[in-house]
Image (tube, rainbow, N blue to C red; front, side):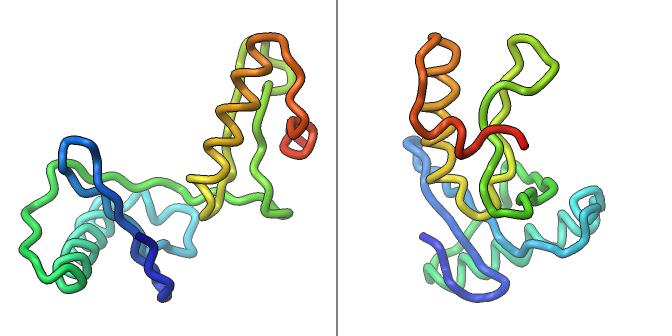
Length: 126
């Protein structure tokens, strides 16, 4: 589920019944490095999810934060990393990770197997 507010909230479930929740992005490129901000955002996400689902949400077992990467043209970079043999990357998804990760899986696996993927040039490193 993806809530369309700003700041947004998204969540999904795992096969073993856990909930993964995220959102509350920051403009600062270094915000993810602040442990206090991670704790505060985690508490905010927990409360928002509990309010939305009308259930009690326990303390999270895991928390993480990361830089939010997006390219200037909004397209990710997927494929062989120039200058590095046998190194492939899939990055710069922005808020479209579910869609672009499927495309990345197809492109990278085809490349490793020595096949051409018709979309590979759309997402090549530039």
